[in-house]
View 1 (cartoon, rainbow, N blue to C red):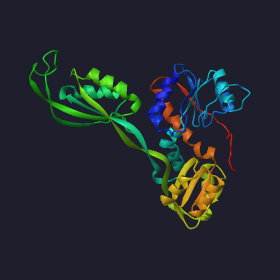
View 2 (cartoon, helix red, strand yellow):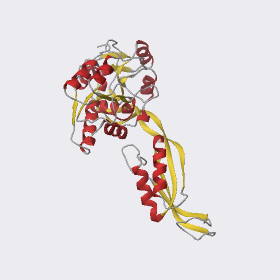
View 3 (tube, rainbow, N blue to C red):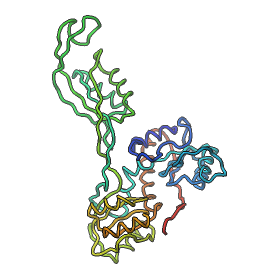
View 4 (tube, rainbow, N blue to C red):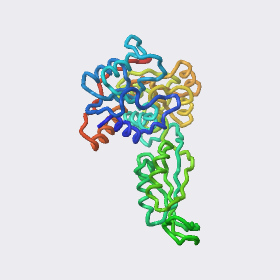
Length: 365
C-alpha cells in the first residue's frame, strides 16, 4: 500500500470537502506514492508523537488535528511551531489529518455512545456542495454507463455506494447524413426508448465521470449535463437522551467515569433530572451553546469553552460539563482505527496502531 491509498480510504469515510473553510485536513507532509506498511494514529501531531511513530518504524501518521494549521515561511527544528513537521520530514514519516471532515461524520457520535445516549441525531445539520449527473442512454447500455460512472467516483451518498435514480421515456433526434450512428438511418428522425439516469458526485470528480460516461455511452454525441445541488450531511455535534434520567447529584460521578476525566462545570447549575443531552467534542462555545439550548438539551457536554461562553450558557440556563478538548475527542480515534484497518485489509497487509499519547494540552483541568 502507499500513502495515496490511505488518502482514498479517508476520503471515502469523511470526504475532504466536508471540512470547514478554515481547516487544513488532508496530506500535511509526505509523498503520496511512498510505500506504507505500518500506520500510527493520534489526536495531535506533536514532536513526542512523531518520535513515537518513527521509533515504531511507521511510514504514516494519521491525526485528527492538522500538523499545519497556519501558513509557515520556513521549516526548522529550532522553531517550536514547525519542529513537528521538520521531524516528520526528517524521519520519512508522512502525515495525514482528518479534522473537521471527521468531526462531521463520527467524533460527536462516538462521544454520545461513550456517554450511553440513545436516539441520537446531529446537533447542527450541514450542507455539502455536490453535482448531479443527468444522462440519457438507451436501455441496452444503461447498466454499462451507470457502472462506468460509479467506477469514476459517482454515486456515493453517505455510507451508501452506487446510488442512482432511473426513469424511462422516449428520446428523439434526427440522424445526421454523415457519420456512423448507433441508431436510425441518415437524414431521418429517430425515436428511441431511453433511460434517464441521475447520479450524485463530488465536484472534483466531474471530469473523470464525464470521460467515463462518454467512453461507455453508445451514442456519438451522448446527451448529459451536470447540475449543482446541495446535499444534507450529518454535521457537527449530537443530541440524544438517557433512557433513565439522572439526578443532578449523579451527573458528575457518572460523566467522570464514562469520559475518564474529572472535568469542570460551567454555565448554569444542573437543576432537576437530566435526560436530553447535547454534545460537541473539542471547542464547543458560541452559537453551539445556543444550538444545544434550542435542541431542548438539559445538559451540554463539550471539551472547552471560554469564560464569556460560560456566561452565555448561564444566561440561557444551560448546564455545561467541560470534559477537556483532548478527552472529548480521543474516543473517536478507536473508531477511525477500526475503519481504516478494515478498509486497508482489503488492499494488503498493514499494521495500524493507536498511540498511547498523553494530552499535550489540558484546558481547565
